[in-house]
Length: 302
Image 1 (cartoon, rainbow, N blue to C red):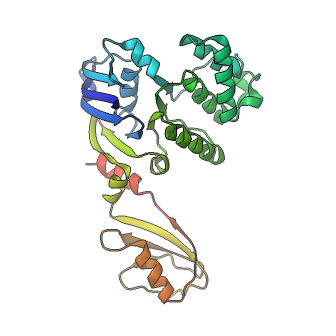
Image 2: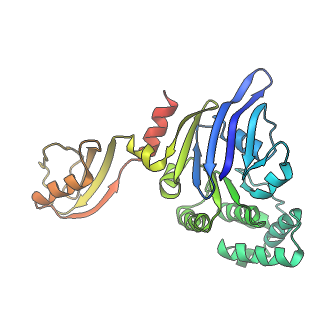
Image 3: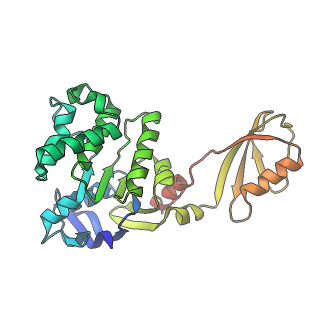
């Protein structure tokens, strides 16, 4: 079953401004899917249409086989949304914001309170449950938005830039929470500018440019299509005159070096073997660049 089934979706604003141009997009139930694109590419318009905040011009959209045109309320029941901007009442308490959201979906008060407690504990906000939301940090506000979106147990969670303004430690904790949520069966649609999130979290991704899908594949396959990867190697006692046949070495010091690998001809293992043959003991290897970011740049510049 498709969690999202979009066919021929277009959105034209006044003045013949085309935000979406005949989009086709299918997302399987249980997927963790990334929708990538520059600002103004059409990502938020797709989300707006799915959540009934934007009226489409043409095409069809279904969520778990519920038709957006004829079963609008059923579609809304399936979706939890975390928008880019904070849109809760800043003068209300954290716990009340989550419980009131449950009430919009007809959840009994006792059940809503239990669900709010569960989510606030999971997202490390329980100690702040009586705090006025205005007093929360940016990262805490973002987590509150996620708790509110999940309170009615939606089958589909839409995250529009969920870690914007969140520090590194909180971001990693949020990643683990989202991974577990997806593992437990929730389908997740993610938009983000932090492309490392796509590599860490998502199974599949689509890239959108000027209202058109320009790439749609597994993240693994998308990464394979970028043939060059640059690594930083940390090691002991590297000769400054070091050379390795077939590899271009840069920024060589006694403690580190950088090397670019053509993944169609070479592998990281080839490099490791070559360094071992030079009696160089590797301490750490880390990618210097982001292959998905390179792919994104190449696609939007085509």
